[in-house]
Length: 129
View (tube, rainbow, N blue to C red):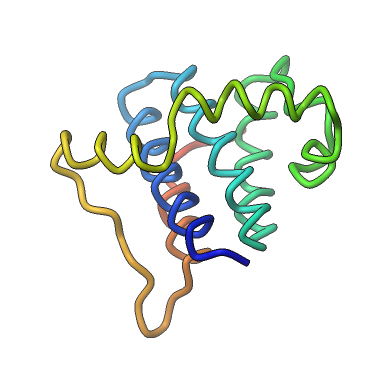
């Protein structure tokens, strides 16, 4: 588990929620993919599962829908190529700058919450059928 991956997970979840609020489905899905990847790498399967659920219900033809989970997807060579493309779209550093430009704060884990709890809270407003 990496603290960098946990931070990336929270950054991307925050941006996914912003994109959803602004009704930007392509951006929402890209940030959900990045959140799911970071969550898988950080050891937060429940966050990755939530991202997968939202994408598969909102965008049924998305590449993520070909896999049962982000963990399964990350083991596939074709998805690895897609991962590289989406990671070029936005690095964690770029995500941090975007939040600063929008004057948005990144919630941090507290005494009674984990990075996974924070990410799940950020994803709550994003609807899935």
